[in-house]
Length: 227
Image (cartoon, rainbow, N blue to C red):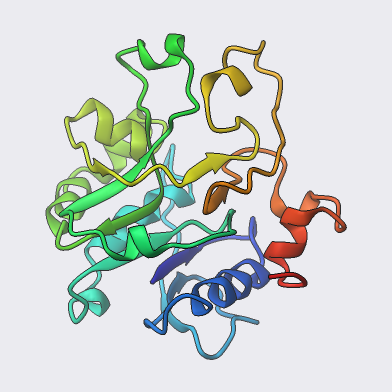
């Protein structure tokens, strides 16, 4: 179980809450690659990863560096989670994955988005993989040019023919919902609804989790005040 904390956007609380949520479902090791381990639960294995400096670089690009890290060689299957998500249900369908590389299909994207050949419906907020070090090696060989040219990892994968298998449909977006009618086909009005039939809620856009009403169910799930 792997996460990434680079820079100041997310505090150690995000790592610790993710750890608690994962620990409810599995006793697998939890690893965090970070430039600042301060405050992270000591039961989380932390490994140094520093931000790079180049035009177009932002922390999402560090996700590709993880693919090449030697610390992961002893694990047959790897599971990655972004920090800006809330685990609210069963993850067994993810843990049972046998795919070489799998990620989320953004089922909430509207037809205009999906029909644009330059846009990807793949979301890598949660990934599983066996051995995709070749992606890291491809990126590392030209990373300065890549981060300058592409908006982020998912954009680069899509426009270069690197397509993961899709996870089961247990994910939704807090901002955009779970189907096009919630946001994309509704004048792009933020949906902002808790959906209990799904296992993972993604906060890949504003608002951030820590900005939620502290009495809301999603915040309380994240903060472990309710099961």
